[in-house]
Length: 324
Image (tube, rainbow, N blue to C red; front, side, top):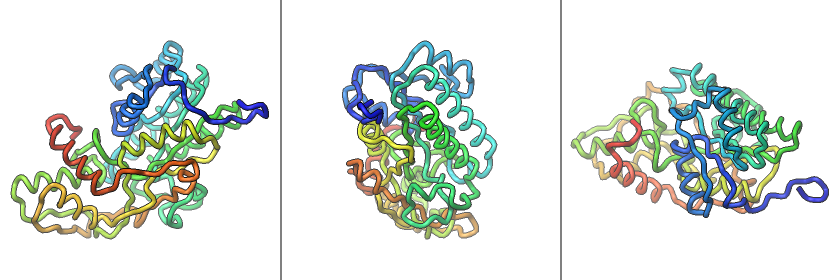
């Protein structure tokens, strides 16, 4: 703390214990890689089989024993439109328990600096574009993933409450749609970009003449490579402090039709691209205002076409072991 009692962010101690919750997931694994690259030497991670974050007693015991100085909470139950729409209770209950357990244990055991990761789905379905941080709680959520969104909003509220009640300099970051190495490529449980990569890669290999995608293809989406997200997380921990969540994105978007064309090109698919308009589109547009992040001194560096190409290469190299 400074002399006037205001926290001033600074470089984190590379030798201090740093717990990455969810270190095997898409975001957590990228954060782990980035921290290693940045010279952190005391990283801690536990798989879900080693530590069930829904088990409150187990979480408190872990924090009592490990006593991390820094934490990134990247652990969550995640999925695409179909999964969120089919299992809303799971997405609400599991994520609430994970968040409350980790945040309560971290507070009790003296975690100095913590970053909570949410999702851009916290914002109203028809929020003014690009979406500013102060759009939170100003309108109705997208109904296909409202249960997951409510859980993430609760996490933001808990961070803000901890700041008010205990004065801890904890922060929240809300990434846009993420993709990259370690993603879930399941045909039914994945998000749009990895689902498209798998679908078009299989079509290219089998010689399929027509690939049909859900919806009209008209919704616009913003995509951020997960390695950029990991870079932004560390930058925020070392350069930002404030009660408001910070949007993390690129500041630009594409239509799903454009995205499908990019993926088809990246995998070498030359057949027809069709659209099943009886299936839901989801939110019509979701572009984040990243002014706060830019003011903190960070911007994305991996372009979408380059990022898709890298992800296709990773998917093909790891096709036998990817989450599916």
